[in-house]
Image (cartoon, rainbow, N blue to C red; front, side, top):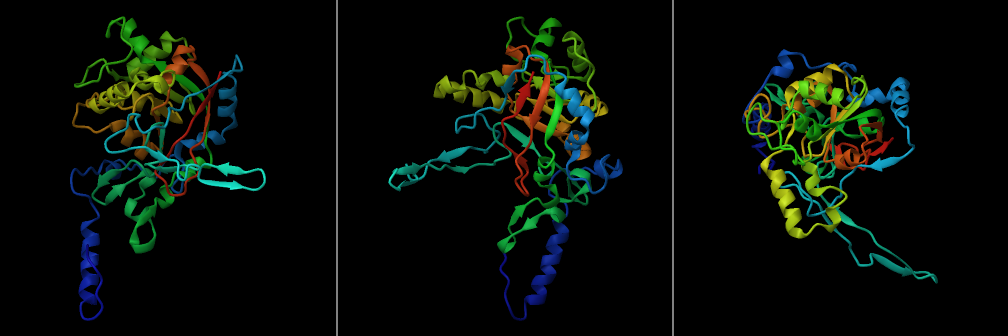
Length: 369
């Protein structure tokens, strides 16, 4: 850490600070100028847009199409449980305590007491999680580039001591101001791959893909084939698409509370190995259909460690959908509840929390059918 000293060294420190800023423009490691060369900005929503695909909710036609899918007047919530033993990527963790036990009271003649909770976590990037504009970017020669060409260095909101306290124009509150009301299409990739003889008939989940061509990768042709198999209308602008890979069955809502600690550990171990998911062709196809949101029962929705391009590309749907197009992603949703209820189409209703400057949001989305 460098400290600022008064006196003769002030000018020298200032020069060093400027030199450090110049060096910091590009992070160490891989650099890609694809966003610059291919002119990812401005987005289709305009140069000043901050909400991306949430703008689809402004279209009353999209809302009408979503509500028209409601036939039985029933609902399912598809958020996963937030819990310290639930699967999480890397060092992320959910830690909650109840301070005070009870936190306050008793008060008044009615002897009121109350409990609060204290949560320390990544908020937007744990369990059911929404990837907002400030979450995913590309390290370019101009610096880390986020949605609509915003360089993260320019976006940061600074607090005391220069600490970054928010993502500024990349905060999750921007899509949170609009939310999502969309026709939901549920892709049961497990049933489809079984129908093609690509996985065993008794399989409950797709395998983790380690190389291109593995059945754990869901391609554009697979998406089209699943839609045909399920007899669904073509994916339309403003739709939301959920992928059921079955890996989320390992901590599904219908069994998580009754799972033993060793079963929860097994679910975490499975998630750390990788996950089935969309290949880049599927994401490019859905982008061409102008969808509003992707979601899945895994921690990323991208196939990994290998997608269609091999293991050298790190969750490429994230950069191609979110950074390039502002098509957001919702991870770790309970697609099993939808598949079990045979809900392949419905009205998806949800909004990320209006957390100013946050990279994402927790949530408990609702599907009406």
